[in-house]
Image (cartoon, rainbow, N blue to C red):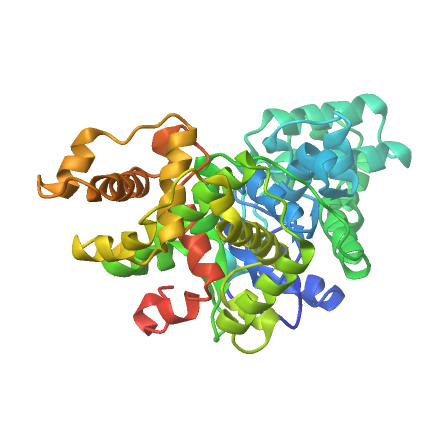
Length: 462
C-alpha cells in the first residue's frame, strides 16, 4: 500500500465501480478490495476519510469491525456502501460508521441479509476487476425496477429473485438468468424488456451506491467518533498492521518494525522495559488519584516535542504511524506520571539510600534497570506492594547469589522486584489488555524511532 498525503481520503474499490469512473468523481488514494489489516495500516498515515466499498470474502480474512471502530475512534469519517462496505456499515452504523445507498438500507432494515447478496465472481486487479457474475442485489434492484415500470408482474419479479438466490453466487450470471426455463416461459416482449433492463447501467445498484458514497465523502468533513475497549489480542493486531508513511509513500506495516526491532536485543529490551514501566506507573497514578495541572501537561508536551520531534510535526506523526489524538493522549498520560514522580516522596514511608539503586543496578549488570531513576525503581516496588504482590525469594537469591546482606538487602529486594515485574510483564498479573507487541511498537512510534528502523532499505519489505 502507498499513500499520497495530498489526498487524505482512502477508497477501497474493486468490481462495484470502474476505477476510471471513480477517479473522475473523487481524487483519493484508491486501493483494491479491503482485507483484514488494511484499515489498521492507514490509521497513522494522516488519512481523514475512509470509503469502504469492496472487500474480500474468500481466500483472505475480511476487513474487521475492530479496525473500522478504531478509525472512527481516531476521528475519521468512515463510509460504507455497495458491497462489503454496506455490510459493515449495517453492522456498525450505530457506532458512527456512515452507510450510504440502497444496499446499506436493505441490510440495515432487514430486507436482505447474508454476504451472498453482494458477493460476485470477478477478475483480478490486472484485468480491472472485470465482473464475471451478477450480484443478487442487482437482480433484486433490476426486478423491482421492472415491476415498478409495469414490465413484469409481482409474481414474475419474485420468481426471478428466487431463481437467482438459488444459484451459487459464482454461477449467477445474466445469461443463465435470461436463458433459464423460467424466463423462456414468459412472453417474448417480456423477455425483450428484461434483456433491456439487465443491459441498462441504471440497474447496477452497487455502482450507483458506490458513486453516492464517493459524492458524500467529497463534501463531508470529519465528524464521527466512537469508542471501544480493545483486548490484548486486538491491540496487538492493530499495532502489527498499523502503517507508517515512508518517504517514498509506502505504508510500512508494524510487523516490519517488530521484526526489525527483535533483531536488536538491547534496543528491544530497552523499549520493553519502558513500555511496561509506563503501564505500571499509570496504574499507580490511578491508585493515588494523581491530578496533573494542565500547565504541566503543556510544558511536558512541548519539551517532548523539542527533544523528539524533527521537522514538520504532521509529517513526523505520519512517518511514525501516529494520529494527533494518540500523541496528545500519550503526552497527557506521561505528564501525569512525570508529575507523580516529582511528588512521590510525600506518599512513601521510607526512601532512605534509594539514590544508591541505579549504581547498584549497574554493579549487578542490570543494564535496562540501571537506566531508570531511583524513584522509578522505588515506585515499581511500591506498585507491587499496593497489590499484595511479593517478589519471590528465588528472584532475590538469583540477583544476590548470596553476596548481599545487611543494609544493602532492602535495596536488593527493590531491584529484584523491579526486574521481576519487567520480565514477567503486566499480563502475568492479570492485565489481559497488555500485549508486548502493542506496547513496544507504541513506544517506538512515540519516540519517533520508526524512520531509523526503516533506514535500512531491506527493512522496508514490500
